[in-house]
Image 1 (tube, rainbow, N blue to C red):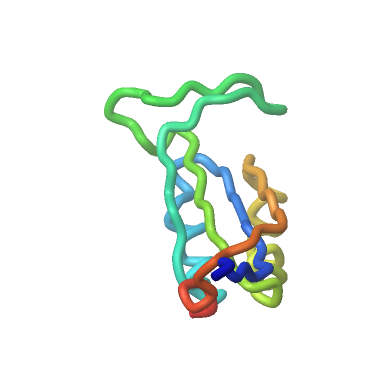
Image 2: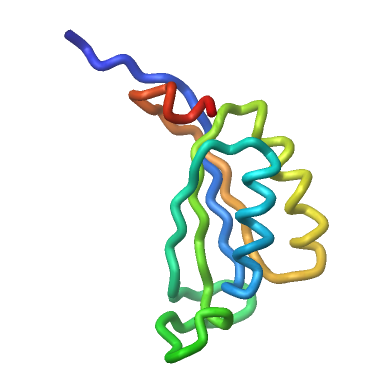
Length: 107
């Protein structure tokens, strides 16, 4: 028996830790069924190098929120985060992905 795969979209949002609640609230309001949060990111971008694992201050580190959703929910997420990104640093990646358990992502 072959594993059946379904087309979905993966949305990855990277922001400062102090803005994590905003991103989570946005995903919840858009009806996204789940997400994964990765804390203490390190990396280099247009604002220079960001160091993860700052002691006692997760709000100054970068976080990534990863979610998989149907294409029709992506527009609401992108529309909701655009005004935020016009005022704050951060980035959004949207990519094609295939999932094996569609019921987990339809919400």
